[in-house]
Image 1: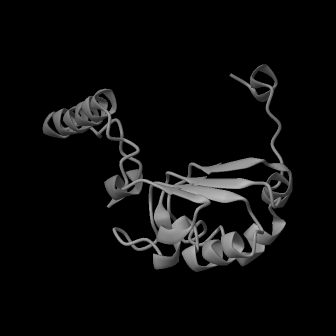
Image 2 (image 1 turned 180 degrees about the vertical axis):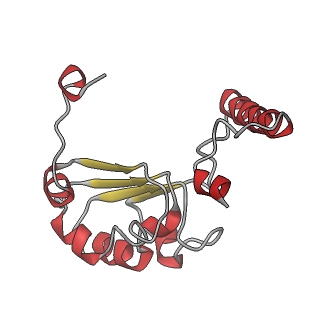
Length: 143
C-alpha cells in the first residue's frame, strides 16, 4: 500500500515530535537510534504527549525521560523495554504517569507460535543449503 492509500504523510522527526499526541517507538537499536529520545527530543514534544516504547530500551535515554516526566515536558510514558534491562531507572517505578510491563509485549500464544515458525523456517533453509528467509544481516554471506 502506498502513502496516499494509507492516508499517511512522511515528516521530519522533529516535526513529528512537535505534532504527535502519542509517539510509539517501532525501531531496531542501532548506533543511530541509541538515545534517539534524549533531552532534545523530549523538549520538542508537546506537554500533552505520551511516549510508548515497545521496541528496544536503549532507544530512550531513561534519565532524560525521567527529567521530561518530572518537569512535565511530556504527559506520560508506557514502557515494555528498558535501557538497562531488566532494571528500569529507579525513579520510573514511582511515577504516577508511567505504565510499565516486564518486556512481555510479545507474550501471547499466537505471536510466540509465529516466532517459533520463523526460527524453524530459518533452520530448515540453512540445513537445505539456502539463505534463511528472515536473515537481516545478509552481508555475512559475502564472507
